[in-house]
Image 1 (spheres, one colour):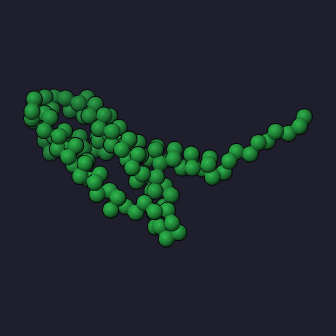
Image 2 (cartoon, rainbow, N blue to C red):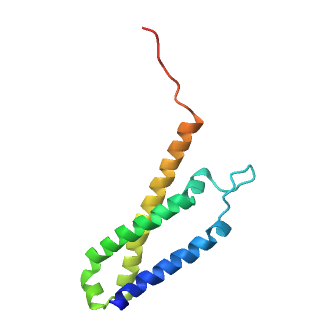
Image 3 (spheres, rainbow, N blue to C red):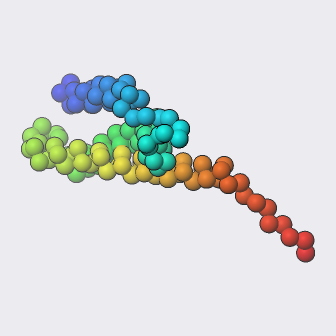
Length: 122
């Protein structure tokens, strides 16, 4: 059982270490001199990234178990299968990040351009 949990524990440690250095890796300022595009700004938002990582861990784990159950149970995964499992985690992370960033842009647009009432007297 311990050997099964070891990759999960290592993954959590990796996520924590990347999370600690995230602010240094990406500028979060939205000033005039900022080089980050509005979409990328939303992609690197801490809350969106946190949600995307959680989604990738849950969905990726389920998909990896479904697609590679025999190899995982036997502990006989080839390098190719391990690569496929890693890609299985990247896909839901990418989809969740893209969806979260697009939603944030939509919400930002609602606040920037408030809906104008078109009530016309009849």
